[in-house]
Length: 235
Image (tube, rainbow, N blue to C red; front, top):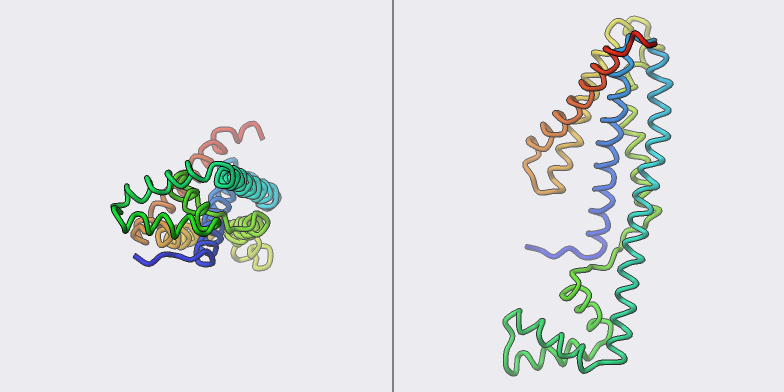
């Protein structure tokens, strides 16, 4: 299996941010649409609540992504600095840890000693090896700000799809009788397509991942519709 370099790993992380942001945006926005329709409220309410959800929830999700990525980077940096201090102050113990790591990998004899000498001959490689093999950590290459921006854009871009039919109905009056049906069709396509892309990322069959996302989104919408339907008397 080919090993991804840092650039490829970073691009994959941003794609994941886009996909999961898009899924969350489409699911939550369509749930808002379904809830409003279930409550038999005006189409204008759909647009008001839908756009409020897009910008507010999209911002919230982006901030959450930013803080999560930033915290992860800070934690990794803290462990790295601690390892750098250990390598400097107690090199003997750290060198022995490298020896044990490579013993577990199957190295022995002269081969083992050569590996230890090479790794400990470069402090950066030494610390990198400790980070990966002792702590199971890889350097976080993704920018917290870029990750948050990708999430926000995806949330709003894909999340707008359930509202598209309602926007079009204001431009083309003959669509008003089929607005919710069109929204269902548009959103179902979005669920399936984004879910299929997610399947590629997680090495799952694309059509199964697409159907899974469609089912989850449809279930959320059905729940929201029923809640709106049973509470419409309060409106």
